[in-house]
Amino acid sequence: MNLFTNLQTRFRKMVFLENKPETGEVFLNQRRVFTLPSKPGWMFLLLLITLFIAATNYNLSLGLALTFVLMSCAWVSVFLGFRNLAHLHLLAGTAQPVFAGEDAQFTLHLINRRKYARYAIWVSFSSKDAAQHAVDIAAFSRTSIQLSCSSETRGYLPIPRVRLQTWFPLGLLRAWSTWLPDVQALVYPRPELNAPPLPYQGSEKNDGQGHAGSEDFSGVRAYQTGDALKHLAWKHIAKVDVAAGGQLVTKQFSGGSASDIMLDFASLPKNMDVELKLARMTSWVLEADANAQPYGFRLGNNHYAPATGQAHRLDCLRSLALYEA
Image (cartoon, rainbow, N blue to C red):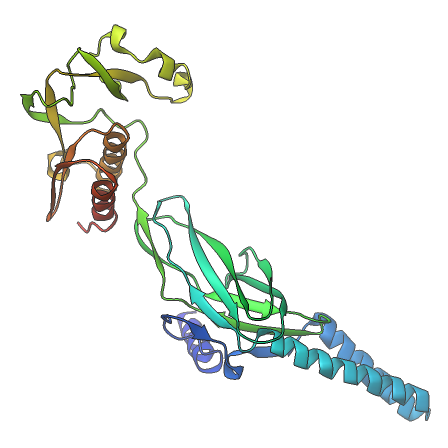
């Protein structure tokens, strides 16, 4: 089986030019567009052969004329179908990071720099069950399309090979080409559901980030065991279904004491699965960021001082996505 797969891969590399990923803008020259009759095309070819044999056998001039007219239409269809895909320019956009289990969205740009329009170009991944999207491209214009690919594990997810094909104009011929852009989507670990409360540690301080203060209301945070019932944010709780897994939240007050939040991978239980540790830290990063609470981060060689903001969150999530035990 492996030998057959290797031979098939080598054959596709030699014939269909399915080589390594391509960077930048790609031009579909004539060598990269392949054509074969479709199923209706094969039936049409069989019809032409039958008409030609019958007209020749019975010396039917009108039958021969009809055969040649239909054959001319087929040749015109071949030319238009090939031209509909050839000389197209392709460019891949950037892919936004996602969490494991979500669909990564890859943006592709199809650019037509010719004076004629392109019709009914179907774009999809090369897998058999991939969803197909049809696009038309006007002359001297471009169009963009998004293809979705499911993500299962964290890390970099390379885009699958893209297939472009068309049956324009009569459906008698299938013209196709493949393209493998050099694009990857960053996949963060899947956040742990119902993660434990944030790990507060360090010395207490009066810096306005009140964890236990009770002077001025400053926001809400996830409920922790021991929080007073009078501090529960009932208006927020009423909007979620706690029985279905919704999380209780507690009011925060500024002016009191607070402890630093340090998300340290090494502080988690030694016998815990590595992926579960990463999932828990991912959940903590998202919770602390949502509550605008400064948090430190330690994972391997990555050490970040307590901070808030999008840049800090993205740095932490990137470290979690690319961690190697």
